[in-house]
Image (tube, rainbow, N blue to C red; front, side, top):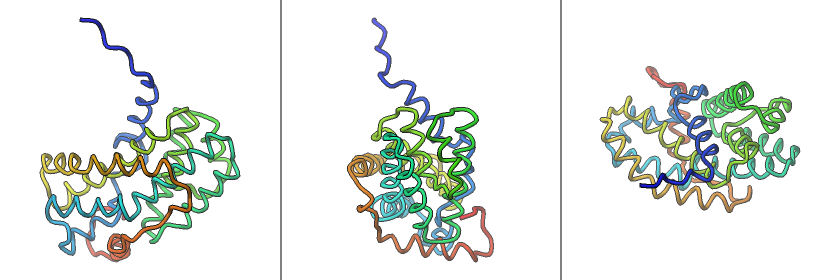
Length: 232
């Protein structure tokens, strides 16, 4: 049997798999994105409820907006338009709806840039770090991916997979759900993740917006939750 032909973009796939998995040092495991309050108040107790929550985030909330911002950052970085990239970074930081969600995205963005600069340097990450402005996580990922020549579609798919994967992992610890339930949730979310990535690839910043108010309110309530495992 002949050997399979190598992947056309094997290096890019390898980088995305490395950057957007739980082992990459951005501290994603310590954030639940408001999910912890959703479990506390009884909204999320089953796989169906978890999938519905994440479906809303991808369609109407932060998952969608993160993808739009990552796409804008990717385009600015690919074009070498550093003022435009700085403007996207400023907008992303300003759009965070709660104190904990701001902490979450800015902490991960800074950590991502530091780790990339140390192990996977490129001009884009140098520019991001020189800017000194607040750096949201999707902006960092989009800019760095373009700086390494990764396609926009693959970048968005990888980012959104990491987004839902981290929240499913949080739900396994909080609800609790079994490992198989977590895989069922990821399998059910695959079509929407792919669709959202495809739609976001064709967006501009004018497409930002959402209506996932329950998730935002959950994040606000988490700030005063008496006992909690996560930082958001």
